[in-house]
Length: 158
Length: 111
Image 1 (cartoon, rainbow over the protein chains, first blue to last red):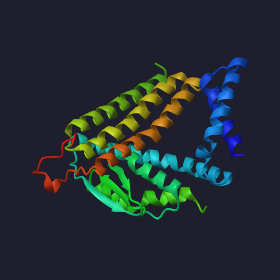
Image 2: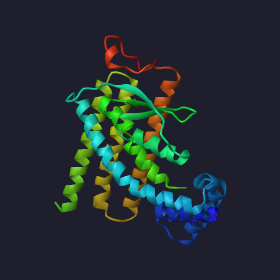
Image 3: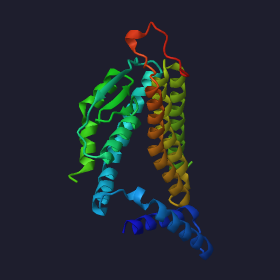
Image 4: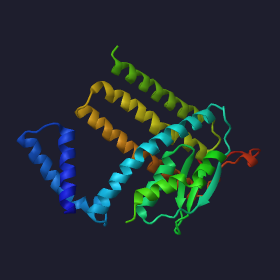
């Protein structure tokens, strides 16, 4: 099942990228898609069930617009600091989010890094995030945990 | 100019401005970590705006589909690369610059 879903996704991608639908291109495409799916379907789909995965993807899609808006706001803030309108006051903070699994941790770490002003530097073995923040406000933004709450929503009750 | 062209031009200009801010930040910020903030992040939004500006005149089709994929990949790859650089510096023990130690020399980028 996982193999089949990977295969369909990759085949759609192949057709989308090539734009050719004649027999030669499709044959080569489906051969490569089959080979790649054989090798990689375990990595793409992970261990979770298909319904967990699709639920996550759906909630991730709902989370993305909020994240995009945060990125725009934070970018403006960093731009002001670049041009010296606001000053920088970098610091390193540590905090430990209450997240269930690697998927949520990855999404949160990537979101923090994507949001300008904060970079996830390291995740220690016990799950403590080490974050470099460009300013006091950016650091407080992470510690306030609004993003963490949103990501917990993406994880769902799985 | 059509409406699509105007919007596309505005997006391209905005994207260029964001990228410029990132470049200025790399020059102005004091140490490796703060420069990473400027270089890694401004690019995500800047490239996104520029690529959107390019996709718009192309209309819905193969070209804009490919551009959408590029935007998606940048959104996954850029923070990953930024994190890898920051973690690399952290693991070898590069100390971040802080305001209360401003009198000292900021850490060299190649330290």
